[in-house]
Image (cartoon, rainbow, N blue to C red; front, side, top):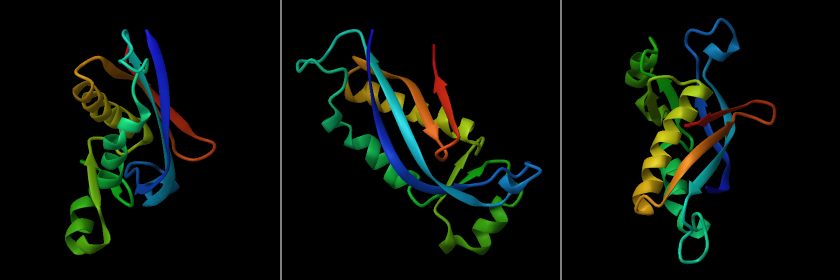
Length: 143
């Protein structure tokens, strides 16, 4: 198996952890970095795992869904009230879990499906590293 990675840096969006006992319960933002590791058994005609120049669809997905968004957990008890009262203040993205861990698992699944579709199943995602800031990151990988 061969791998390569691409990083999308400084994607700004907010989230909150409604059950957290500290400051993470407040809506707060980060400039997130997504490092995606791709794999294949057979290189393409150019000798690439994936052609980095042809991955614009991943950047477009990040821009359309997460850039300047506010990620909410489905179970957030304040989500519906906030979105009803201030619909013009939020670009909501709703997930089962709004933690960095939940977000990494979700984006991994989205990107893996997209890469498999765009490469005809020849390549796939094996790991997604999500940096919340310069000190904290999570990694989601599927074995």
